Length: 639
Image (cartoon, rainbow, N blue to C red; front, side, top):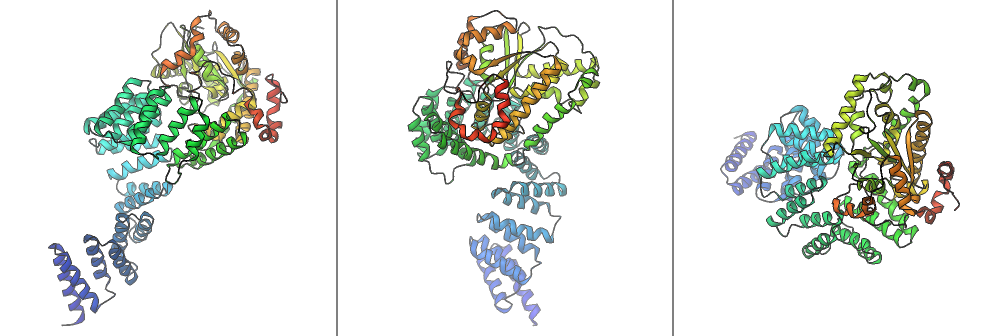
């Protein structure tokens, strides 16, 4: 019998034994063949598979690598090697093996999907996105690839596209509780809270003991202001598993964010009983300690955290919290160090890397470039809208006191306020060439766009026909021309704060990042944005004939009653004693969505006035940029 026939007989015997489940005998047959032909690639590949089936991961890897050495273009060996590396928890090595396979078999959708999973495990999100696109180009109905594609897009911050992909995945597999849950998380990112809650409830209908979906439902309900229902949702998760750490963390976070420190501290204690070193729980405990005046204890707690293995998002939060604590302790150098670190980590966070701060800057420049007397002269007359039905707007640079102003006005029974809802953005998104397109609008189109605005308002509030709407969104300051175009009778409350304090406070905040907030990763960028926004406001106020009233934060906290009366007079309202109880109303509100949530629930406080002076040396290089506005708004750089 010739050599080839011997090899064939041994290989056939090994395959028969493998198919019969006689793995050890199949392995022996392979080894016999390899004794005669050490470089037999097919036998080495089969041996690798058998070693894997027998639980010998390292031997399996060695066999596949020998098969590849014997036959570098042996595609199946590369693929199998990738699978074993994946099983052994070596995603980087797995990715290299799948790439080698795809160089030989580029049309294999499943291999692109598996490569994406390996890349996702090592946080190479952009590469994972490309691999999932490749998988779906070759197999559009690959439901797992479609689901993971949505997840990766969410991680990258591409929420609109993520929602579309997960909706398509649900069309392919409507009974997937996991997919409904993932869809809900993206809807939350899009601030479509009611839809998110429906998605989580559908996930729970399909899988009632789905703890993650119970927790996510709790978050969505909290977003909607339904505090009791949110507590119940987290409680249901804990009924399923009283030792689920994430549920205790979520309940503690709800308590802290809703100013229910009793709930927060009880949940923190239970959670630390499960994991005494959990960084998220210690962060929440430190926030509670800060709010109870125990800043030194909070610093000690956070400085003792072991950061190895701390999730990125938690590490960002810890850095910002340490900054706040050292600021409270009058340690500006240490505070600035931690704020800088928090911003560095936030800038590098995967979901923030592709957010372009230039988009908001370009929009501001575009509005400024269009805004001229000739352009305004080309506007047609808009249809009438009564003063009562025209909304009022609270605008200003972020962290200037707009949330405090909104809370004060919210307490007045004749006003209904909106706290940072994207109502104006929804309307302006219907204009294909904003801002230029505003000039060519006729009465019918203006009426339609007003309806879009008021429909957006109705999505976020049960509108009382007898109440005046007050729409607070600080950076709507750049849209003063749009406010004038669509709501000529609108009153605008411009909230100002010392420019240096406003910029510093933005740098100190761990904002939800978008193209505008991405300008706050450095103090210099914050100052540049401030100057650009305020130049546009100056231009707008000079050209548009706006009906506006200025509220300076420092004056408001210095003489609350007089400044509030002036503001109400501007709005044409009588004084009402309820506005003096704004802090109690805020506490009863449950949730405030802005970073000021813990401040506006207090009585008027003064420690944030002129904070920037303690950081004065950080502003020397920014003086030429900011001092003109310091002077224009009635402040003094040197006092």
